[in-house]
Image 1: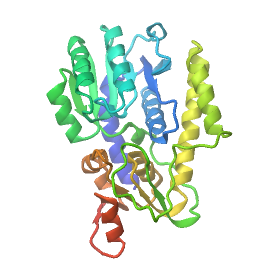
Image 2 (image 1 turned 90 degrees about the vertical axis):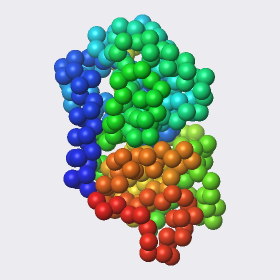
Image 3 (image 1 turned 30 degrees about the vertical axis):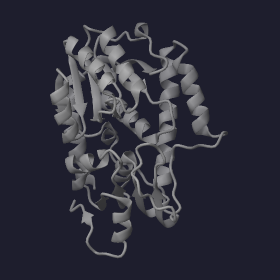
Image 4 (image 1 turned 30 degrees about the horizontal axis):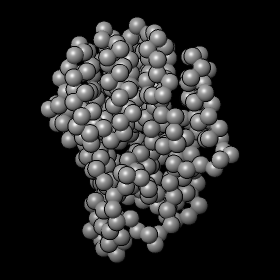
Length: 320
């Protein structure tokens, strides 16, 4: 696994480095102040990339707390990566468009995204904003997204791994059972989930928990107008989210997950696992672009295919 992690991290650094000038500064936009641990892993990965380039982060902001006067760096504006470009989660495209409009003379760097066209009107609005800007770089994390981006947007587009791979190897916790199954319960979940199997997920937290406390602190700090406390609170919350993800995924000696970052974080932890494709095919695209090289990982197109594989020897397994 170490060889794969070094390879994928090198691919990421190679693609991102030209747009994060060494020793410069930047503003970071679209901090994920919610309980999706995968977005926190991306955020921490982007911060790691900035630190490795000795780039000073002058400000951080969420979608809800964005104000142009808070972005004061002389270098690029860096927008967090993920799977929210194309209208699937409108608030993020609205923020992207606003940032591009507000800063016509600053470089804009969109960290690696999956592109899923879900709202043509919003996509056209974003296309116009990007087309009117002189310096937008759009990094995408799979070849299907690259083809869409090259067709739809008049800007620099590049293929790069998910930013969470900048974190490098993570330490898994000792397993407590043989198998843990993570299944999402939102609009990206594929059909055919197996109701007879107990599952876990990371988007819920008890009302009294360090994660919910962190969410509150990040939310308040993000609206306070004080960059240093805001960034500290956000980073603390993101780390708690990542720790929570590692705790959940480490429960079993083996893992089955249908979350893209359940898969990515399991790879970083070296957890043997099977990843099930999501409704939009983002996982399969990431698999073909990058993670099929990782050892001890199996891809399955559906939950029913995974169930069938438990009694059949022919599964699609990485050769790592």
